[in-house]
Image (cartoon, rainbow, N blue to C red; front, side):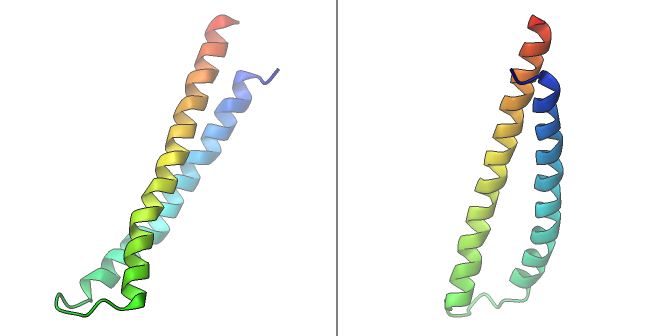
Length: 81
């Protein structure tokens, strides 16, 4: 049976991944979007960047939800032991 400690270790790994991925991506994308003119035509590069902008938070949200569930399981296991 998996111990509560192992769930917390997975959670402890997930959160730095979430934070680092956001820190590595978000500021650079904001700077790139600031340099785009409002009246620019929709290029494939811009559409790809916007699509990635919408998809990347979903991945982080799934990781955060996983970390939450694992923390709840670990807490429950600790309380029941």
